[in-house]
Amino acid sequence: MKARILILSLALIPALMTQVAAQSTGKDLYDANCKKCHGVLGTPPKALKAKFPKLAAFDAAFIAKHSVDSIVTILTKGKGEDMKSLKGTLSPAEMKSVAEYVKELATRPRAAGE
Ligand code: HEC
Image (spheres, rainbow, N blue to C red):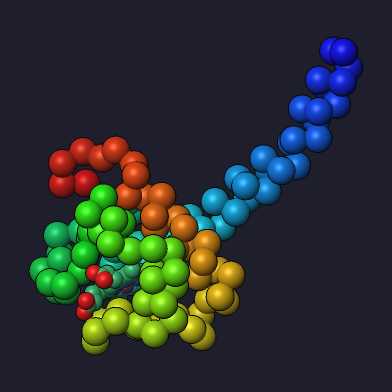
């Protein structure tokens, strides 16, 4: 019985690892392509907010209004003058994982102004 539980838990490890890998890809892509404007945790730094007044924070209110698909659409088409399309930079799969990371960012607790 014990052996069976052990085998079962070993079988779960690859599944868990894939999930971790997918998340770190989303984070890596975000850090490389989005962080400089949208901020480490999805709240734009003050200087950028001054430069781009329309820059939204990825907070609970934002996430309530945006699905992963709608974020992917923004990434594909761009938005306004300053949010460029990332079509040539990210593959559709990469856009999806970065969009999932953006959704996840909003669920993180953060300090005021962070
Ligand atoms: C050059 C700075 C810059 C970079 C880099 C950038 N963005 Fe943006 N982003 C903006 C600005 C400015 C807006 C607001 C555009 C508008 O509403 O006119 C915006 C808007 C958005 C929106 C829509 C917000 C809304 O209110 O509808 C999403 C989603 C978004 N960005 C995600 C990303 C992601 C994900 C990345 C990285 C893959 C990224 N952005 C990279 C500047 C940037």
